[in-house]
Image (cartoon, rainbow, N blue to C red; front, side):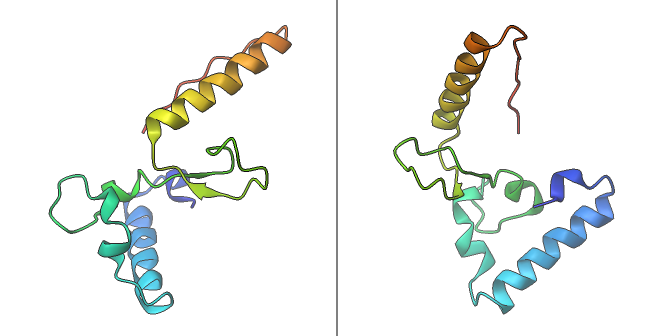
Length: 103
């Protein structure tokens, strides 16, 4: 999603509303039920800030060699995987890289 690239609150709000409408009208899914695992305040309603934690990547499962994009459900595990890749990269390159992961 391009949500994090948008600089205007109105645009971000529009994208969130559009995704919500598409999930319900095209996928025939209840938006709040589909993303209930992202409902951080537990009120049963997934809001724009909750959806910011939705993350997909193709390297979260080291045993999957097909490298399909999957939702990253365990941020701690993902952090360890990214740190491992970073250590490997830095050990093989003269110019090392530092990364910071944040929500």
